[in-house]
Image (cartoon, rainbow, N blue to C red; front, side, top):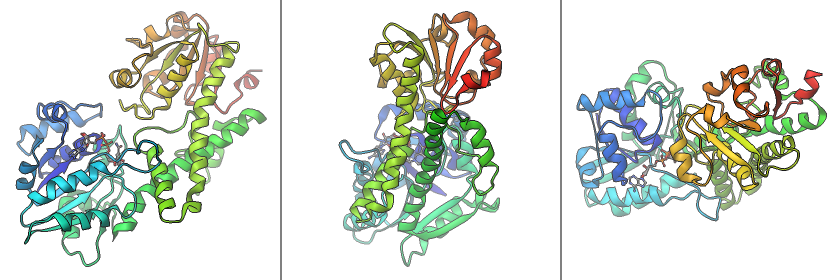
Length: 445
Ligand SMILES: NC(=O)c1ccc[n+]([C@@H]2O[C@H](COP(=O)([O-])OP(=O)(O)OC[C@H]3O[C@@H](n4cnc5c(N)ncnc54)[C@H](O)[C@@H]3O)[C@@H](O)[C@H]2O)c1
């Protein structure tokens, strides 16, 4: 099947390459010329394991191409995926729908014949219906454009696998639609043959599935981080607690990793946009708990800064702090609303001499926070440090040898912001180790 994928960021570039991998003919479209040039040259402009191979293979096979031309997109296919950004609006919790609207406004007037646009971006409930009305008003006489919603659940770091073998495919269609489901079944024939659950529903429900999933995940993380706050005061150990409650299969251990909390281009802005939309619908009370979820999450960043200050005898001025990690999570170079970068920034602004290192996110971090100190290697970041802050749980950091690392730093103090280090091994190597939600001093006594 021929299709376009409009918006070639983390979601769209992955979707375009993976649809080609499934055997389709795909044209990726973006307004960012540099991004399109890079993709067309076989270079993924961000870090996503496995994606460069899929991209190159399909460019070479002639099944994949990229353009900035909407004219070309309109002529290329009758099936279009929309994957542009829906960031948080400035000065508001609501999602900025400018880019989604721009796609409809730019594409629809150019279309001829029968087309289906599958929205993949995460949007406020009601968007698909609104975009359908917009498309109807812009379509040429004799042209029909159907809007369906096909929310995306991929995880950065596992995006290729999640796109080629998703754990479910959700499709929202308008009442009386006959075309979108059949086309989606053809597009996703391979995962459907492999038994991937396929849920077809109305447009509003499909939009709500995505934001509800993210609200649930954010709540689960903030739940354990709230318990973490209690553990810190009462002298409990949040990781032992999470292991124990996680054994209850109704609860489960996943997403109960206490630590610096969530960030990235999705969870924070999605829960805020969900609250904003609930307010517009007159149901704001239903989601006020998400305000607390957000606040708990943000407090973890403050706590990390406070703990660092504490181990520096109450004053960060002049102390050298090695911050390990800048990406919002491992296996990604995405620094959007990154807890690691937020902590590094706060420490620096409080007078610490910060040295940040991340295996993949250095360029993005420098763009967002150019005034921070950056190191070219983990060793360079650690050299002469008064305290080490582990902020993103990259494997490289989890596997650091406390003995070797101990040779580099000035003072052997580490704060594990992700609860991924073994306190016994680090303590045996002469380190003082602190962690969020655990009083490790007590454990060593
Ligand atoms: N990144 C993820 O892990 C992920 C997962 C699931 C859902 N989503 C959702 O997918 C959407 C996109 O997220 P992303 O992370 O890929 O964002 P992104 O910022 O990486 O990519 C968005 C792309 O859209 C392009 N764009 C903007 N306006 C355009 C226009 N008018 N025409 C063509 N291209 C245009 C931008 O240049 C950019 O390349 C968001 O709604 C997000 O919430 C993202």
